[in-house]
Image: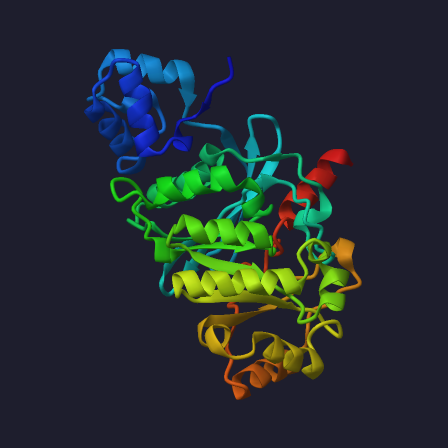
Length: 356
């Protein structure tokens, strides 16, 4: 019998599971405290939980579903982890230091089927979804790294922007969000969590109706269908005529800001013409007042040599067009540029080494 990760259960699910097996409700609270407040990694360390309960948990669950395979540390404090899962697959997780706190970028799938033509994550097709426990454990691994440093630092922010399309793994994504937000555990506030999607319009509607309270980011990367389809094949299924109304629905229902992510590719989507098209696409009303365009300098990928990083002058010019037309815009602060910065790049390199 294969065991699943205990991190994959919400407190409510853990409580129900234990009660069904004859244990009192407070046992779940005890276990939860050991997991997320004391952060033990062995059932035997849960010293105030009775032996029968611990034996039951150990029979059905594990606390370790991955091991550190590679760790890269940047001069700016960014740490990229490559974890090996129980089935031998590799995933990436990134710990970043900001002025506002410590952020972890998590992966939701092994590989990616979205197929963006500039992205290292899609070099290897999706083989499976990660379980909720495997996603939570990425946060725990990063936090345990901080604990071992002994400086009292805690993960304060989460971005679900790693390998894979989070909305293509919706059930496990929602369980993950429920676990990390729980005020009796990690207590990471919803407004400190951002989920990024490549633009699955139907899932944006569903996610909006779930009212999770977390932030939403949409990978746009082009202001018209022709260009977006060229660099993001997902646009064939969800063209702008479908995507933008879904974004409008989110804005209307939540009254929350949304981020449109826009990777700048030299001589592809970084010209004044594309900037003006993007201004027109955003238009007026809620989109203009609640949308923020996040311009992202491109991290070149060897396998996608047709794409190059935009010049600083082009980035500034694009930014200025947004600003002059009243669109909220920012340029993403880069992290880990001296290591394998592009999402999926470290994993791809390691798999090549193994194959070679």
